[in-house]
Length: 433
Image 1 (cartoon, rainbow, N blue to C red):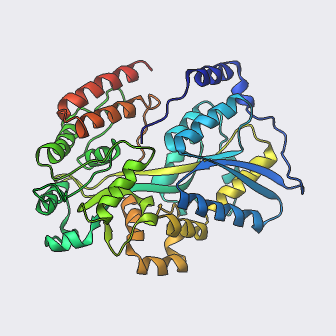
Image 2 (cartoon, one colour; image 1 turned 30 degrees about the vertical axis):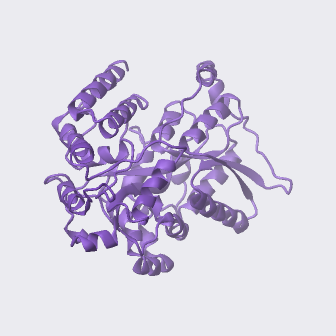
């Protein structure tokens, strides 16, 4: 999905407030109370319809589980809008007490000292089970100085959803798909010459291409962090393969454009309506899929390299300038949302990845996974996934990759050319730091 552009006015207002120190007083440190005397905790977040419903169920259960705190939620259209409105709220001293964000946005706020160090609460809490959190998600909320600026609420990773009937008709066993080359061969076998059926549909955007590059041994930066590596052989080989499969061989297709998530649902519909052999999509798609029609499998490696797609954490942050009482309440909600039982409820209801190892021992989840084996695929993939990529330029490297992905996927521009341009832009941004 294309990122929204924050208006120049908003950027200026926020920038002025941070420079003058106003950003560190985003909300007066006075405790907000509800009419019946509970400490009110404001939470901003986003999600699809199913995810919002499940999230709100957990919030309601938290509110009913105790009589000290009341969480009140406000939803936005997507993670980017939450971040934009959060910036405006900080500048206008109307920020919430906590928010759900992806890693780069949480980190940006932390670097400006706008979110609290959750370690202040964890270290005093003997009941906190750090070792039960999956490291690939937990560590995304830690900075190089050991600050815990966010706690993972749930994980997401892109997995493969295949058309069972199409695979069976073509005599393809999904277990044999070990590499992207294997998948391309399967896609070629399933593709109809008249264009009525395509073998595979990667999801529009840079995400799938980045994942495949990581599974070819690629890295975003050099080991010393001084050179952007996105036009190395490992990147170019993968992206050029996708260009070939999409434009030359026509065994793959990318749906793009439309309103909001329209392209995403068009891709899903192509598979469910038997127009495609499968697609690469979010673990969170599981709530919208019919698993009598599709199956799920992990992303493969590329060539002889092991599979290493990104496993991204969606994180809860505690805003710095809430009162001490509100921060205590935020911490209690964070713990509640990430109990194994609530992680099981969340994962079963949405398809997103649980962040607690012991979720797999929750009886309800164990029974569910036995009946719905696809539920374990994202969790298994996340266990060997690559943590969300950290872009030291504040997103400019990833933005350059998004532009390059459009050139390769939609415009048939050779990968070397697209990635050389992206590397030049990204390197300039890195050098400017």
